[in-house]
Length: 181
Image (cartoon, rainbow, N blue to C red; front, side, top):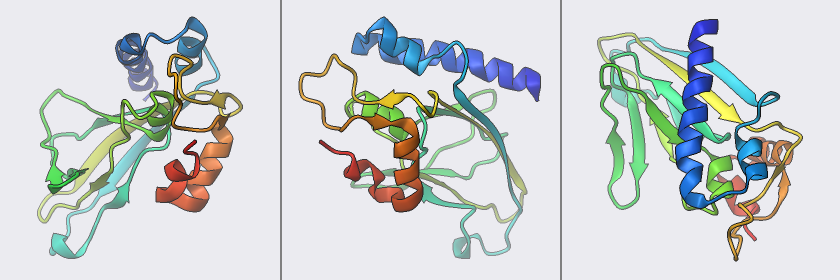
């Protein structure tokens, strides 16, 4: 588990460098998104037992991830679905050796909605027990969250990361709208 988590930290670091480069963020903002230490990182193992009638059950209800990025290993069995505006729910096929990268709420805010948070859910499988491994990454809870200083017209208010996470806990889907400028 430690080796896997260390590899995820390295992957997150490289992904955020690629994602943030086109935003032309400051070095201070880069250090906020990819701190040398004190980041919020969580490795979560998910288990979805098979279900004889999967149309009557959901493994994990629809949501957006709260932090910056999530790396998901679907472990070879489909079950992840994303919501596409105008099209509805779409299956994300599990690809051997590949990860799914979800943009979370904090990156949505920091990028001034240039990188929108992805609404997704996990579905159960009729015949197979499904396992997934999610690695969540975010900046320190005590740090300040705001759109990058490169944006002339920020769409979101500035607040502490922990304040946003508290809003998300209390208001779930409305959290992003509550911090709009």
